[in-house]
Image (cartoon, rainbow, N blue to C red):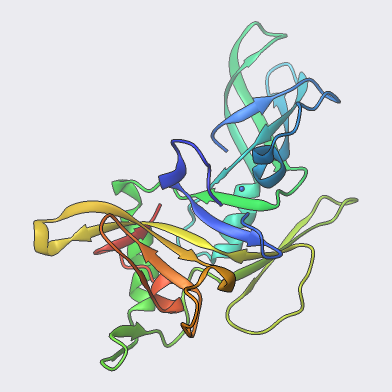
Length: 261
């Protein structure tokens, strides 16, 4: 779920079948003429289709493009799966240029993902106006018990951010079905994505509210130090240290000090 350039701090990574998973930078191409593939394309690129119709003259237009990340569509009170589905498939009315009318008109636009990438990169586009949404999530999570032994919050109802999602697109109806999975064991599926990285903005109250970015990354066992035993594979990467963390800490959200980017 990372965009591997300057947008790297703005995303949440999810992995498909043990690989990392990925709308702001579009590589538009002529229909039927895909660009040459690179490693970045193989991992992150997916195809989108936008159908638009001018509501004045009813002129229709279709644009196919490639994208490397998707922006999360905010909906207060909705699950991650529901918001992700609306991010992969949108339906809006907006002002757009009409080639027939030769001016800007109100148009109806339907955009959807045609293909899914191996690594799905999702950016939240967090800003101050989204505070109420993140507060509604963290309030649910923080109704838990404080475990002094492990120095962490133990959620009673689980985290809003799932560890795995299954995304199925019906080729005939183009309907998207997304299911969330937490910690339960499930068979590997071709359309199963696993969370591997979360980029978070941390507010340090001890430093007068200064903010900095940290990465929580699920590291494959083969990269662990030889001879060490880990209960899980999650590590925290920040400016001055790298250390193991619990799985819950990786997905924990608190509007007062830790928000996903």
